[in-house]
Every structure is written in C-alpha cells, then in structure tokens.
Image 1 (cartoon, rainbow, N blue to C red):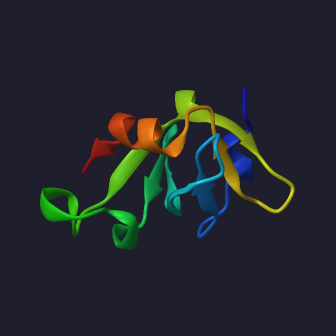
Image 2: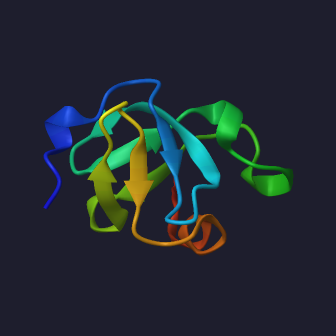
Length: 81
C-alpha cells in the first residue's frame, strides 16, 4: 500500500504506461483530487475528478504518482465531483 502522505500537490499522475492522466490538486481523504485543467473535454470539462487509493501503484522518487492501470483505462475509473 502506498503512503498517501507522500503524495504532493502539483505532482504529475501517470498511468502504468507512462501517459499523463492529471495533476494532483490535493488529497481528499483516500482519493487524489485532480486539478480542473486536467478535467477533459465536453461534459467532463471544468470540474474536478478524483482517483481512488486503489488505483495508486507507487509514488516515484521524483514525486510522480504512478497508477496501476494504463491511462486510457484509469480515466474510466475517475470519479467526478
């Protein structure tokens, strides 16, 4: 299990494939709240999304948060605010 206290604001969140998923706004309990600028397009644009602790595989030495799923799959598990 990842130490959630090691996740820093403005850290990049990437999928297991190394593709950008978002940027950490802050931790909200056991979920990462992503910045609005990474909220996507259409009906997803302009509000925050959350990634649950269960998708977090590791926090790398440079602070990057790596997920256990590829980016295209991980975004389907995001929760909307």
